[in-house]
Amino acid sequence: MIEVRTAHTADLDAGTLSAARSLLDDAFAGEFTDLDWEHALGGMHALVWQGSELVGHGAVVQRRLSHVGRALRAGYVEGVGVRPDQRRRGHGAAVMGALERVVRGGYDLGALSSTEEALGFYAALGWKLWLGPSSALTPDGVVRTQEDDGGIHVLPGTVALDLTGELTCDWRDGDLW
Image 1 (cartoon, rainbow, N blue to C red):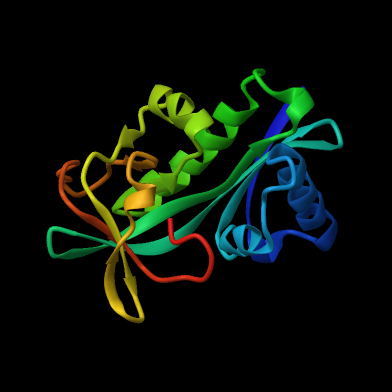
Image 2: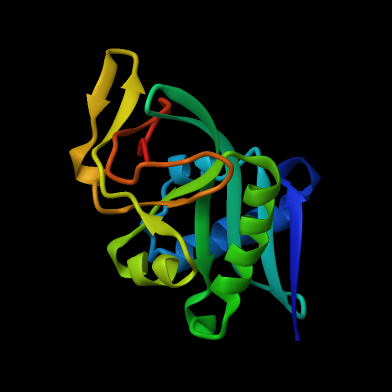
């Protein structure tokens, strides 16, 4: 039997945070960095438990995105992963369902950057591939992030979006998207 729980980072104990970090290390085969983990903190987490074992994780944090001259509150999805031996059992969809509820209830839109392997997964859940150019508002001004084009998805919410227009994210250390 699986159970999906949501909780803010501040409400998770050290053991749960450690288990989530370890799960993401396994899910991303050692490619999940400390900065990636930092990006997943400070918001709401969706945790999928099978008994006492954590088998899935994802988080949504607030970011500012700019589109057609408007600053938008985005629920930005980070750190979505399922333990490798538990994949293809609906755990990822359960994580995303919980995160989408948070996004729809509190943000103008949802956004995420996907690995190439997960593009179909997000599309199947109704996330829309961003077709326009991406950029970031950096300390040096707006900088084009062409390497991220084709991997950004949005979950439309309360504002109209032109999926072919430019989308600009706020600055942060590590991966910008």
